[in-house]
Length: 96
Image (cartoon, rainbow, N blue to C red; front, side, top):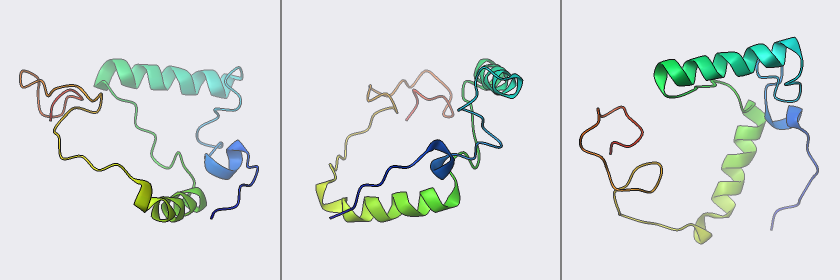
């Protein structure tokens, strides 16, 4: 059984790089603008290092503890749980 603990954004997110707690600040607005630009340009916004290493380690531990409760599926679908769209390039989110 896992123990619940109250944690803050800084315990999980690299707020120095990704100021999600200060979106009304100049840095926060710049962050949102850069994410929007990436979405328009690339169709995806990648945030390397968004989750801090200690939080990743804890998530892995929790996932291992919950493994027996996982749902397994062999069906092929997109990240949106929709049928694969063969008409789009392989890197598109609706491709296999």
